[in-house]
Amino acid sequence: MSIAAPRPETWIRTTAAGLYCEPGDFYIDPRHPVPRAVITHGHGDHARAGNGQVLATPETIAIMQLRYGDGAGAVLQTLSYGEALTINAVVVRLLPAGHVLGSAQIVLDYRGSRVVVSGDYKRRADPTCAPFEPQSADLFITEATFGLPVFRHPPDDQEIDKLLHSLTLLPERCHLVGVYVLGKCQRVLVLLRRAGYEEPVYVHGALLGMTELYERMGVALGPVLPATGAPREALKGRIVLAPPTAPAEPWSRRLPDPLVAQASGWMRVRQRAKAGGIELPLVISDHADWDELTATIEEVKPGELWVTHGAEEALLYQAGKMGFRARALSLVGYEDEE
Image (cartoon, rainbow, N blue to C red; front, side, top):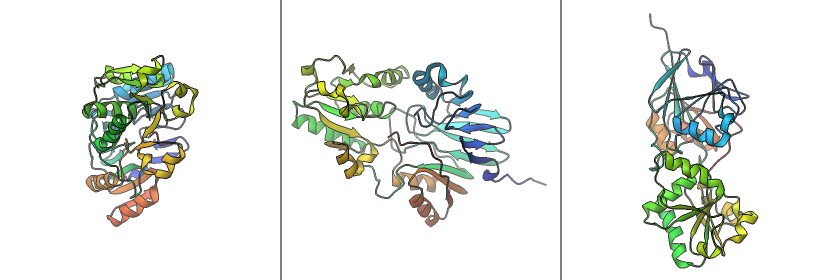
């Protein structure tokens, strides 16, 4: 007589520390230090310092070591994409999520029941990281950062063309582009190269370490120079990448007549761009947009869907219309590093 597979909610649940796999006795992207953690990717709201045992892709471990040094974890263990590791009775695999370098979906198999935790993900092509691989699941836990129909991201090359066109029209102005340290910076560099821009790109000092790590991991980014210390005249008509907060800092005062741009999915919201003093909003996102979220749900065809990290209600409603059982997971403590 066969034994029925356990329902996912009987062995994976939310706690004060985050998502917890009970039979494996580990947490996924815990919000505070725990004895055992499995990490989806290196952004600081998912990969925090101070955990005991840490399991992640080799790239994510390297990112955590760069950011946290010895605080990355007491014991660090790498698991390459597609490899299987049994933790107690749970088989763990990491599959590409397409979000940033090393980002992974976490696939958990336990007694014939499968849970897939998406982490942050996107579906469009990105040469800086491995593409998302859909995986069938009894339970699919998906992010919903841009889980509203208004968020339909334009083609990346269209947004890069806007930046290069502005550079042609305003050759005396430095174009200061706000990007996040991990992922967005390197992706914009690759998009510029793909568009034929071969000039050196200047970067804020806060971006240098991660950019060098990407290069060491085999991601070619073209000529990159530190903006700090560069002569003011040398920055005229140049692209400077910096953290989104840089335009409000004294550091930016030395730039020649900077035109402030920002690369983010949130630049779809005009009021947000205007409030941030963004002259040139570039809608370039490292998260799935509405169409990509709904297409992924249809492709995965989960027995049940849990939605978290964003506009949950709209995606729950849409999933119901598509014939899927869905509920809000309502995890807190995760920001939109976008």
